[in-house]
Image (cartoon, rainbow, N blue to C red; front, side, top):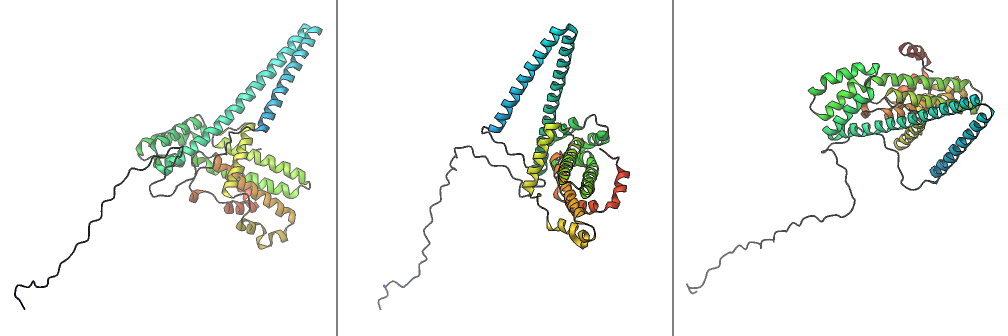
Length: 348
């Protein structure tokens, strides 16, 4: 073998480098797509009641009612003017008396209209406070917390039952830096003071519906009585939390409560609630009429709890909310009625 022959050698071939990927800027999305901000890796602390769906389409029912109301106002005005003219033809004194009564009726109608508008505005303001409070609790938004504190001071200012809470909140408000903690401080010192009275209102109305439904023989009277008791309960709860509802705002509040129950699935009685009513042979020992009254009382209690969620300015956490099961046990325990009357004065 020749010594000049090249000896075998091993070579290591490195793989070819991959070309670097060029990062392109994201394409701009042209449209009105808006994404809501989410908390940083955290779940929502509280959830405000779902607002009523608003439709911008033409509502023929509302247009019909508005047109009929306008025609009624024109007819009433023409009738009043013709009546006053006839009174002036008979006697000047009768004419001025009729004109004075017509002016007094117009003034009263104007006051009622202003009261209705003011009640709707107060109810809408509570909705905005709830949304700001939920944003401050979930996102630690300082601007939303400031709006909530200012709104609470405006809503509860001048009320004797909120004076101590407002004073305590003013003393410790500047000591808390986080927006979330300031909202919780306002909830503890001011808003939560009305929860006990709300519980008494719901229990009293529910117990009254249970008893009177069980003893009244007419079904039509039961429906009217239950509806009246529920509307009064809504007004009391809304007034307690600062809503001050009028007639129109009370019906709007009832619509909001029904919508809240539909969203949360509270229109149907759960198995646990049914067990509280029919368990342990309760219906068999008493009567089917009492069972019907108990079911009506439980539904009234559920409506009251939903009204509390809708009217409360600061939404409660799920763990802090009163459950229907505990309220049902108190509702069916008629021995607690005397204790309830001792703690709170009866209301009509």
